[in-house]
Every structure is written in structure tokens, then in C-alpha cells.
Length: 141
Image (cartoon, rainbow, N blue to C red):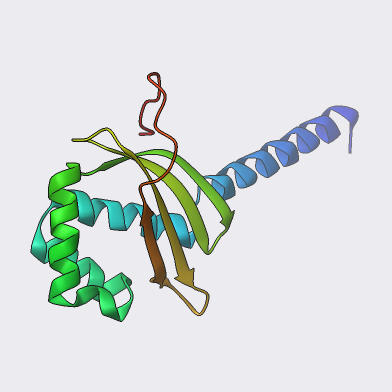
């Protein structure tokens, strides 16, 4: 192998490694996928959408009519949520801060998924006693 061929091969290998790591970094964790799915259903404000998401992904208790009613009321009063920040402690759990569109309250939204079935959420918590958003805080898109 000539020096020029060796340099080209090394460059190709480096690019391949960079491309592969970038692809892995852009793949969302199972918990992040469920966070995004939950927010999409929640923000829809639609009973059928929230119920369908609950049947497919949420804990069994979530699809009780009282829980669906409570979720719909929270969606209506908050105006939906925009993600401010997401912290993944591991692929199976996320802690996020979301901003209520209507009230501008910052809420902590935590989700954990089942290790054996990562499309199934085991824990969803909303905690509204977090520090308020700074005036310059903008949602993550």
C-alpha cells in the first residue's frame, strides 16, 4: 500500500467512525421516544388520541376513564407543553422540564420505561413545583 493510499484509507475509516457515532448519538433512547409520544398525545387534547397512546404505551391504570378525564383537563388548562430541557439518566428514564403554553408554568415531567418492554411506560410523573423558566428560556424544537 502506498503512502497516499494509506492516507486515503485512514481518512475513510475516520469518516466512517464519525458517521457511525453521529448516527448513534441521534438515535433517541426508548425513554425519550415515549416522552415525545406522551407529549404528542397530551398536546393533542383529544380523548381518542390520549386513550390510544395509553393502551399502547402507558401503565394499565392510565386508561381508566377518571385518569383520561384528568389528563384531558390538564391538557386543556396547561394549553399543552413545550420541552425546555431533557436529561437522560439512562436509556430507560428521562427527567424533563416542560413549559405550559397557557400558564407559562415550568413543570418537571419524568418518564421511565419497562426494561423488558421499552415501548411500555412504567412511570409518568408531573411535578409543578420546579423553578420557573427564565425570561429568556425558549422551548427545544
